[in-house]
Image 1 (cartoon, rainbow, N blue to C red):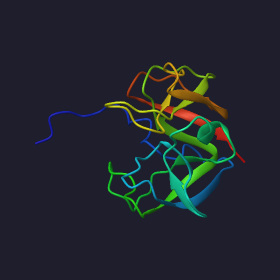
Image 2 (cartoon, rainbow, N blue to C red):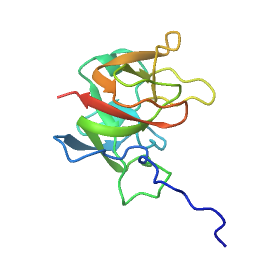
Image 3 (cartoon, rainbow, N blue to C red):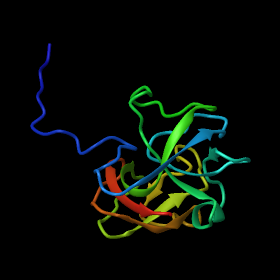
Length: 158
């Protein structure tokens, strides 16, 4: 039996496109070897049309960075894309992303490329976390968000 009722809807879901503004979405095949979650940053894999999670600074700041993994209605709600799955990646537009720490609107978006226990490669945050993350060029947070919440990300990697 339902015992609670929300007074408002959630702002969105990880990897959900935020609006119908101009966007650029391209599909890539996950070759990371494991599941890639919705709303994380991916970079070019070993061949044409392949994508992996970043593990070096240049994979975020250089020309090999692809964009943010978009949620698809064809995937189970919280699972992401398994190795070998085709996944949509947004290069330009606005998308909801989970953040590791508190972020503020109009601030730079950093992407994790070194992950320790409990951390996610390709995750977004507000700073470099020592030397484990780097600012993503032409990307910024549009909304404030607390750690573990969703923030609206505006990016243009085209």
